[in-house]
Length: 84
Image (cartoon, rainbow, N blue to C red; front, side, top):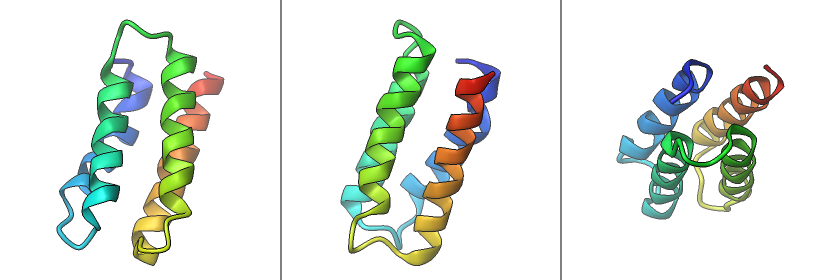
């Protein structure tokens, strides 16, 4: 896994392990972790797939506000990593 993705993966792990976060959001975050760690796909494809999933997560009506903020921060990290 690329070093630039590690902070985003760490935050995704925090969200996926947070018991106050709805299960479907935890599962989406876990899927993003798997996508980002998949070295077979090109980096830009992994980032775009994960960003798309996280956009859907951020728009979920059941997501706690602080988790939504975390998701936006993760998306920002991924966008920065894609520019490098």
